[in-house]
Image (cartoon, rainbow, N blue to C red; front, side, top):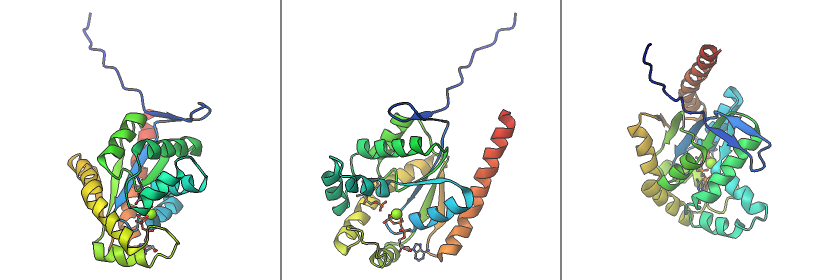
Amino acid sequence: MALTAEVATPAPPTLATEDGTKQLIDPKVIFVLGGPGSGKGTQCAKIVEKFGFVHLSAGDLLRAEINSGSANGTMIQNMIQEGKIVPSEVTVKLLQKAMAESGKDKFLIDGFPRNQENRAAFEAVTGIEPEFILFFDCPQEEMEVRLLGRNQGRSDDNIETIRKRFKVFVESSLPVVDHYDKKGKVRKVNAVKTKEEVFESIETLFQKFQHRSVMQHVNAA
Ligand SMILES: Nc1ncnc2c1ncn2[C@@H]1O[C@H](COP(=O)(O)OP(=O)(O)OP(=O)(O)O)[C@@H](O)[C@H]1O
Ligand SMILES: Nc1ccn([C@@H]2O[C@H](COP(=O)(O)O)[C@@H](O)[C@H]2O)c(=O)n1
Ligand SMILES: [Mg+2]
């Protein structure tokens, strides 16, 4: 009799709404990181248009939570005004809900994880490991000009809060990029080009991702 070791294949991560009505099996996630104003939201919109991902901006979800009149609204508003990072429990819950309710399985998660606590909480709750990290590399002077010219009425686009956001980015967010860099997962993009040129340098990454996904489906069939 042949002796074969039984290797347990880990189950793919699943994500469900709180009432269990919707469940995603093996969702694919790309984290989109970069300093404030580096162009994350701008490029995510282009990726969605061409590659059909669901774009979830953690900042947008937190702002929507303020506007919904939630019990956490005042706390979130104060944290954003100070450029601070909202407790992970709140942000992860919002992301998890948005992912499950989308009914889709390919996500660009923009502006998250912002610190190691965000990263660990997301991993613990969802069991999802990102495919890769899209990182926009942009000097502070350029980001400052962009933020001051954005004109979208954001309460944190003023010079005092912008400086606080830069400090938090360097002290808390760059260590997360470093963490993933050590795992070979960071795809760094030079963000100091026109919006169209930045997108051109991203496109190849997503074409490769799409090709890999198709091949995985073919091999699994
Ligand atoms: N490549 C670019 N060249 C010049 N301006 C740009 C470029 N990309 C984005 N912008 C502009 O810079 C501003 C900030 O861009 P965007 O909102 O995409 O940044 P972000 O990284 O999402 O910022 P935040 O972290 O604050 O949400 C916007 O006004 C946008 O139109
Ligand atoms: N993971 C996150 C993301 C964002 N925030 C707070 O929202 C502010 C705005 O975020 P943007 O990505 O839209 O620039 C950010 O400065 C934080 O205060 C957060 O707490 N956690
Ligand atoms: Mg943004």
